[in-house]
Image (cartoon, rainbow, N blue to C red):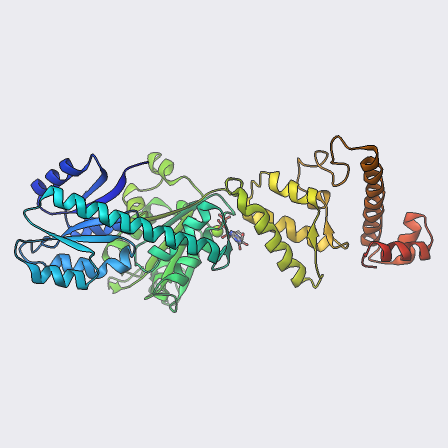
Length: 463
Ligand SMILES: Nc1ncnc2c1ncn2[C@@H]1O[C@H](COP(=O)(O)OP(=O)(O)OP(=O)(O)O)[C@@H](O)[C@H]1O
Ligand SMILES: [Mg+2]
């Protein structure tokens, strides 16, 4: 088992080092020397337990800073258990801290053996809680704000979103095209305390380079040729709310610099104006590029990357979420059938197998489009593998005759099924080609109208 992650928040470097030295055999330790560092470390939600020295800069001799951080904890990392480190004889503060949700306290000078016992107990508590939470979660929901997923990676994403959304930290969502980045961004917004405030989307790739600044931050009348009137930018519209910067990897370097400054200072300036306006905006960004690589190539500013990447959500490609593929397919099938008023539509076993084994280079979007198309074209209530039109699977899978080593009896049945299947197929196509005109379809099939009629009835096809 890998070592348990412990965050030590301690401004006295000597004490921090001593703790690290004494505990790193048992725990995987991260040090934070002030509240800001601690908040950043905690925002990722990766620490089940943290020790918090209440006396932090700028007032290391009073517990104020530590208490303030403790109060913020539920918003930053609600599941982290905090053990406070207090000055000697400061029981009153210790009790106040417990009242604020700390699980235990330890007085300075720290007795390492005592702290170890407290830590073991606290980790144990955290693990029990997390096991309960996970169990409840798994059975409770394969859906989350419009997303479907039972794979471990999606469940973890749902959990992380609900944990980090209530903070105001920036979020960077990465993943290939069609993996669901926009849905994730919306889920973060919906789970946040800003859910009733605007969610403004900007696609950085869709705006011409020379207009991006004005689009983001606005302009004054006459600021540039064509600026006939004053316009507020998207950041102003998003005030108190959330802005979603989609395809942030396409943002020109000069704009990256400006965006970073806006995020650091919380103010914007419209083009042509020197007035700074305060904006309170939570930034969510997404990209299908490998940002670290972009940083290395000098195409994405490292400082902006660090600023955005406080909370990182990565969506794996669909073919790495095997458990989700068929569940998603069936969900899209149901939705599309309902939309088109088609009644029950189901996947043939081979269609299901084809869906499960296909690579889905276009990820969830491709799966959704494939199912939509197949449902629209299907008239039989069954979608067969070849109706999916996904390249590379034809010939490998056919819905009938797939049994191996069959007895003569089974072969007989297989042939019968093959005939039925061929009938259904030919009839479906003829009907589709003629817009459900029975006479014309019968002609194409070289059978009589009544025969066609009977066959349609027999196979439950729509005529
Ligand atoms: N987990 C999911 N459950 C249900 N639908 C999903 C899921 N993930 C994605 N989708 C659907 O797939 C389509 C693509 O999702 P989305 O637009 O969020 O992807 P994206 O990562 O932003 O893609 P791109 O990089 O191309 O912009 C959307 O129609 C979305 O509703
Ligand atoms: Mg998108």
